[in-house]
Structure formats: structure tokens, C-alpha cells
Length: 244
Image (spheres, one colour):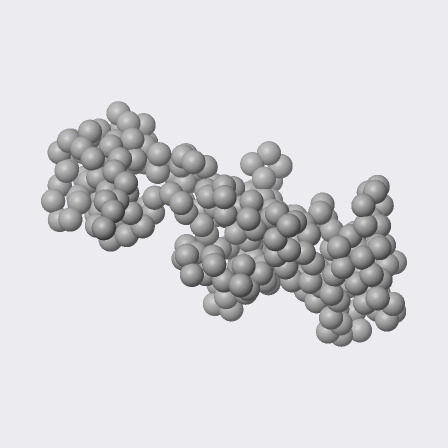
């Protein structure tokens, strides 16, 4: 059986956002870091970096944060942005403050605009991120759209044609599946992630999206008990379900 990867205690906790290495050293000296029931005394000691570390180590009596790789599922609320650079409150502000100092840093897997809610993935795993967003993998995204005007009946054929061109672009969209759910509402399943794609598709069909919510990525559906603004760690089985 292979041995787990090891890391210096002070470097590991600094990378998890618990402070500088000097600040972590102070925590160690004060006996605030406990591994397997025993207070650690050497900030340079090597500790195993495994997914179950939070069940083995505590800081100030609370479980240590999960080490990298870390992937979260969030029910993104309206009114928050997905970028560190955009103006306004960001999804990162819904996470523990120290997580903004984690290394490697957390990034959203694609984006939902400020006026779109629903399923959002956040990760520090670059390989996982690119696997989800790569057009080659054709990972579906399902959106629930509320529309300003009634559907005409022509949208299904238009969206599935593979010939629809968005304004300002030179490549047609991949075929998408439209499932009307009411006179002015529909589910739309796409396999791409172009800028404001869903809103622009309905605009190309002569309509306007007044509310938009994403509830599925691949085989992963937004849990019904995950409230807006809430998040949880996404296990490996759930991550794999995206691609199945």
C-alpha cells in the first residue's frame, strides 16, 4: 500500500489560509493544533495530506479545512458575481474568509452572471475544471428560463438545428434541446458555455429572459435541500457523476 503524501505542518496550514508560516508557528507553540488527539509542538513536522485530514486534525478545537484538491457545489443566489474582478459581492464572500488565501486558489467552473441563480461548481483542481468546461467533453448544462413573451413553437427546431449564429460570432452553436414547461417558460439543455449564451439564444429567437436558473451539470443535479447561498464539499463519486 502506497504511503500518503506528506507536507510540512507550517507550509500546509499556511496554504490552507490559516495565516503566514510565522502565524502558524505561533499556533503550534500555543498548543492549538492537535493531530490524532495529541498537540503538535514542531511546526516543521511532516503530516500526511489525505482527504480525511479534517477527522484527524483540529485547530482551536475545530476540524482543519480539507486539503487540496477541493471541489464545492453551491446554490448561487441572485445578486452575486463569479469573478474576483467584477464589481459587487462575489460568491467567494459566501465561503470562509480564510479560503481566499488558500493555495492553490479556488475558482468557479465557468460562470453564472449576477442575475442567474443555481448550480455552481468551485474548485482548486485545474484538471477537473478543464474537464468540465472543455467543449470536447460535451458536458450538458440545464437551465430553467422564464420568458418575457410566449414561446412561438419555432424555438425547438431553431435551437436544435446546429446552425444558430449568435450576434457578433462567426461559429454556429452546437445543437441544444428546448423543453417547453409553460407558455412563457422552458428548460434549455446546452453543451457549450459561451458568454451569456442562454440569454442570447432566446434574444436571437425574438424573446427576452426575465429569470434564469441552472439546476444540472452533466449527471449532477442541484440538491433540493441546498438553500440559495449554501454550499457543501462535493465528493469524488458526485464529481464522477458529472461525466456519466
